[in-house]
Length: 57
Image (tube, rainbow, N blue to C red; front, side, top):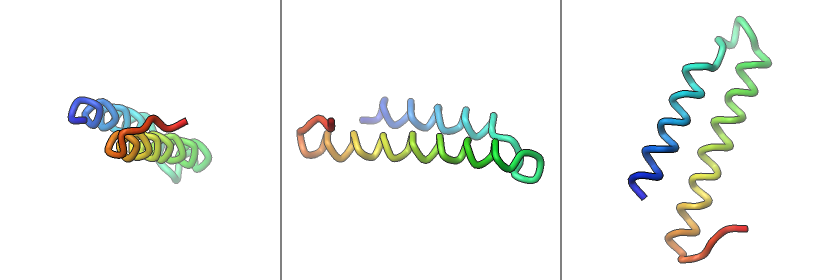
């Protein structure tokens, strides 16, 4: 789980570094936040499934 956590954390940091400032490009900022949220939600879903011993569909 540690390696997967580090991979997700790196992806989130990369997305945050590319995310435009909200006052410069509000729509781009919102889209980047949505991608970050999706990454985190997906990671949580797989972590929960891993703990339960099942693979999410």
